[in-house]
Picture 1 (cartoon, helix red, strand yellow):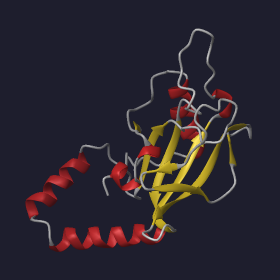
Picture 2 (cartoon, helix red, strand yellow):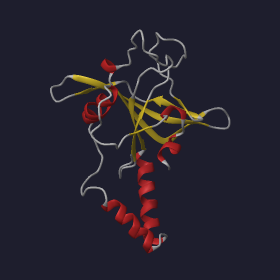
Picture 3 (cartoon, rainbow, N blue to C red):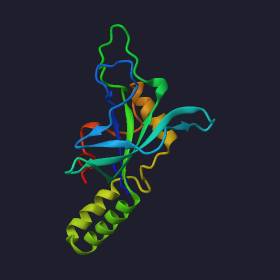
Picture 4 (spheres, rainbow, N blue to C red):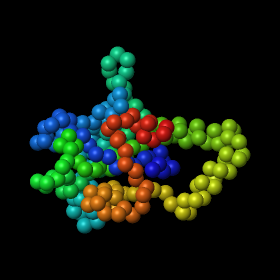
Length: 193
């Protein structure tokens, strides 16, 4: 789901960096023809009582260039996980040992500079290039969303109301976060950008 700030949220699983190595807790961050590079250390996410309920890692997408190097792209990501609910297999349960977690939430978004460029381009296009009937259709689509509704959950809400429920196989409060293979695709393939 994208909001007006060019943010997209996905449920995804994290593949192990070394397939078949069940003891390692390192995840592979390869995606498409690039990789997600960690930009900061792991931050704890705390609830209103100051209890740690999960963690958040920040990444930037690095694209391979023709000479074998990497270039920083316009894509950023935050990955939310709940370590206390990491997948645990029972004796009779079949599971993919190459997956590190059942689910994490990935929040993919544009850099502030790219957000501004996209917003400026969108504003120009809507003012000069789109026919009036197309603008009206878009206005009607926006009206179908409850007035004032913008999906901008806090870190705590993402963990408590979405990721925890998904990990415990409980119904979600709404069907706004879709499942996607974040680590198998370039960010633009996921976001439709």
